[in-house]
Length: 279
Image (cartoon, rainbow, N blue to C red; front, side, top):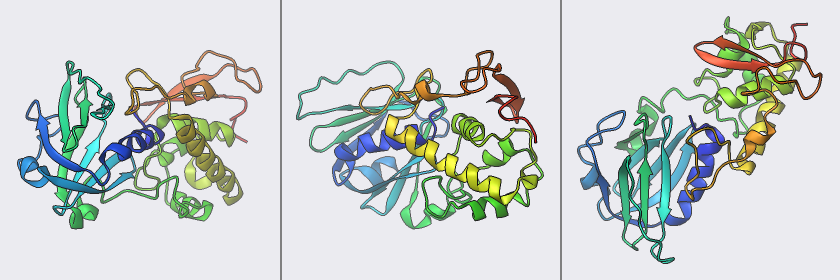
């Protein structure tokens, strides 16, 4: 599943061809993905201007001058591909192309999603904060408001393990499995540690690594895992920097112990039992 850095990379690729541009029409090749497409999709988007685009957690929010917002989620395998009219790029529609943005300057942006776990929904822009997918989001890892004090205070109410607490989107929004595993490794924290027992000074170190790893991943273009590509069709390369994720059975880069894999909350957790042993 594309995580925060991948979604950031996608929206950065889409902005030059969509922001402050007009949509001629949006074509849907089926009635739904994870959810049905908005019944008023044509009415709110036809001949509309995109006045703002923002990533909120792992969602792409496209704000229109009609007073509506389109909320896009990439699901497990969703991707956008741009076909530039100015560069005379031939549009190549393939299987699983489900949403087509026809821009009034001739550009075409196609959303493809083989597994169909992604979605495109709408709401009034003034009601975004009440939209169910956005209403309970915590602070974004790139936001200056994400401080060690904020995380420490939130963790005092957590009786769950550290991995589960970091994956709680109402605490930190957009932080996913890959980067949680990597941040815990850098902070030398065992994923089974009860979140509320971690001292403030250690949370400060963890917060630093969360911010660093997200920044590094965004700069690297995200991580290529199975289906992910950015809006220009390029792969992300942060996976070459993984210390633990997906490396179970391999040697730790630091202590040469074997990387272990456990299941927490239905998700795989990768860690080094020696570097991240409980103190």
